[in-house]
Amino acid sequence: MAVARDMKQMHKAGAKTTRKAARAKAKPAKSREVRSASTVSDLAVGARLRHVRERAGLSQRELAKRAGVTNATISLIEQQNHAPSLASLHRILSAIPISMAEFFTLPATQRNVLFYDKDDLVSVTRGAASLCVLGSERRDKRLQLFFERYAPGAGTGTEWIVHGGETAAVIVQGLVRLEVDGQSRHLGAGGGFQLLGKQPYRLLNVGKSEAIVVCACTPPMI
Image (cartoon, rainbow, N blue to C red; front, side, top):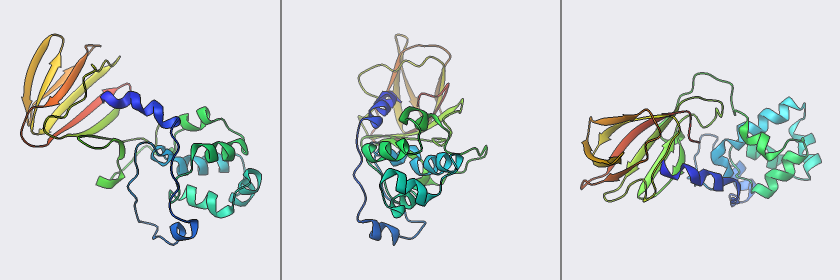
């Protein structure tokens, strides 16, 4: 949660492309790749691109021709088998045309029922503090759920989290220390907290094993 601010950097960082297009095309449709939070593919670029392309009445071939890229490039991006750099994405969007800002505010799907397997969650951060989020496809959602893992000694960081809404969390595993509103409280598995205001807070795993926290907030942080 503390690193939600880092999501702003996602629009500044470029993403490395996958292997050669032919090799990516040969991968099974259900194969998955480990994607970092700095890649634009984590923002459901493929589904968004398909949505705006079809809304503009363009075929993949026509869009590719306008953008000066191959038809295979557009196809691979829409299948989430190719993570374009922001420069490449900008060129493709300019051919529709649609601005980057508008593109990333569009919901990637209109479905109101979303299901996720373990590997479907979008990663916000990785490492000692690993945060994943549900519902990244719907930028118009009013509730956001985080699945957080903290290694021993890891936490939300030295800076305080201040959210202008409501936050509630349940500790699923481990022992964490919550610092909020001048108080410090140790919370174990089954415990939790709820904040109904802008009280600055932070979490730290003070146990000897990994801590798992499920946290919900409204309005969304990301």
